[in-house]
Image (cartoon, rainbow, N blue to C red; front, side):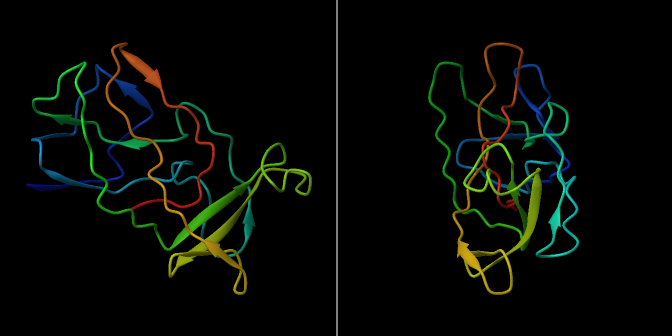
Amino acid sequence: MFYEISRKQRTYTFTSTGKPCLTIEAGDYVLFHTQDAHSGTVNTDKVWSDVPFPELDENTGNPVIGLVFVKGARRGTTLRVTIVDIVPEEIGILPIRSYMGVLRDIVPERTARVVRYEDNRIWISDKISIPARPMIGTIGVAPKEPTIPLPPPILAIMAVT
């Protein structure tokens, strides 16, 4: 079977007590429409502009889409997941922080460059691009403990759809 999950089905914790939005069988396919690490709070209306972006917290930062219950999965066994494809959105952000990264000594404050994804490249301006390396972000299984907050992302470049 093939299923899709909307980005509205998001959570900010790995939890063993949460209600799944989908129950699947081994071998099923799921298309996750994901949300960027800032939960869509960064203004991306103008490509190649520099915009402020908020600090992440446990209620708005690093969402995951789901929860998905896999029939037959049991604690203590291996759950194998195959990522078939990662398709970035056309517009995303490249966060720059004054306290980390290669530009930390150059930028005075947190800012994000609104970038364009095209031809497997991230276009920082109409003339400058870097190779894209789409990433999955955060993925996991329900913990033994009732709830574990998600860690903040170390680097988030593009939203994945």
